Length: 145
Image (cartoon, rainbow, N blue to C red; front, side, top):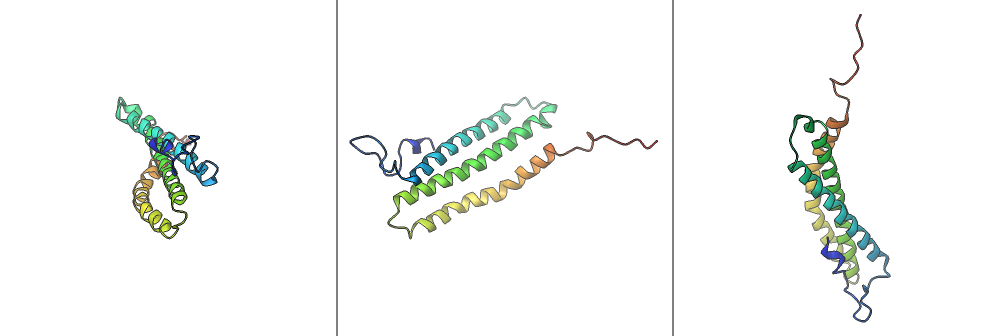
């Protein structure tokens, strides 16, 4: 996503150096979603590196590591969505005249993303529930006598 900020769809105006589609609303969608994808994917990588370089102490397995995994997976999913939005906006900017090819390409590009989300989203839900729900050992017990 870093390279997409410098090699913008449509190229640059040779005289001024600004992007050709600078005044298009879809170009702004591309720029914003590209930046969000870059920031969230960087956050995701840093969270996963934090898991790899952890001390793996006993107390880390209760809060620290699951929290890093939840943040990493959440930002990874957000990054993938933002990347697909940037891809769709750039494709629509470039193929405006050939709109018949736009929908099949987007559908084909969405297949691996959808499969990845369907496989990994249950892990995110389970980790969130198991990390932040009340535990059996932490709840207050009523006295019977």
